[in-house]
Length: 554
Image (cartoon, rainbow, N blue to C red; front, side, top):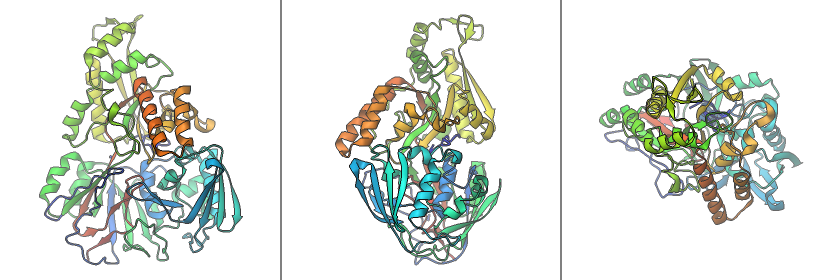
């Protein structure tokens, strides 16, 4: 979900040297790439093991399975893709040297490199491409993200050992964009032949690092792939990675991660807490690298398939009862900007026209509830209709960051003022996923990171209400609109950028008027880097961390 959530969607089910270097990437802007500590860097040094501390452990190391963001973070280090994307959104070769698009966008012919080998010794070829795409869409894989992105995929024909002809059931203008994402990284077909849970533990790629060991609830050990010689054109060097390896450590508490960074006990941390930005500015040994991620912002999606949110008036009332701007200011110290529309600012074809369709307006909320028949209140101030309280059930995963839990507690508090009885229900991640699959929620917390506005179709399209018939559904609202479906399908079919932009403008308007989500803030990669670490990159397609060019001062 492209998740966490979500994507299984994921469900998470939900992120110097003497001066602070902060980089914000914006799709289609002219912002220049800057790297931390460049004034201390000389020639890259080979060797050393980097310790990286992140907040959440993946459910599975194979990003084809489920599809949570922690999976793609680590997949970025050991998997390569068919194509790459630069900071301007242009698609370039990678494992595929070139391609042709035929049959009105129904056929893609990929010409592949001949010199790539997976780290288990298996050759990369057209059969490997076929095996990977088949694996992503196989229902047994339970791929909420990769499989969801390529639902149009039907088959791959092997024209010769290094030419793969991929067939789609309908035109898909976002196909190359999603192939550039780590969720669709190419794995060894020999490794994929193992049982799914075995491959989750030790997947095999052709990338610059190798998964050596996963110590659950503690760390993943990665070591350098010495044979690596096919980096993407967006990289700063070619050949093997500079680092000997990476210790990928799981430390849930943000303050602990930040303290370890300041002390030099770790080289890089993810999800720098907002309250850490001021101390980072004062610490000459710490720099920050940040980038807003594209897609559907962090949100709570309202379940329209059951009361009370099957009534659009109640949906809008709940959304307008939530003082999100106030919560973001108090919890995140005004470091997180409100994302008010269905697309994050850095998403292609984003429109600013819908940023204020969800603004806090308790007067409007009360008027809507009165019109919807919720006129009475009980002794505690909660609204009643036919003797029943206006109750909203929100499962809260235990892996949700503490600050995000606090945000929803503030939603609970402000919504109570207009009469909503909001019940936050803590659950394990496994139980949370089960509740989601069973549609047993009124609000599902999540987000979806992807590099295409086609995220609108995935999150709100009627075809995504029951993916693979096993309960997994990216469309958490249960929203169904033939008009919306037709608009986003037209956007996928056209190769005209201006026509596509106009269609996605229309799609954003439809979703904004349907009042399906409380959107909060765009997901952001927020990295803290110690002064002996150089060359850390944020890769362009999903704005996640990449260590291929990273190196350490001896």
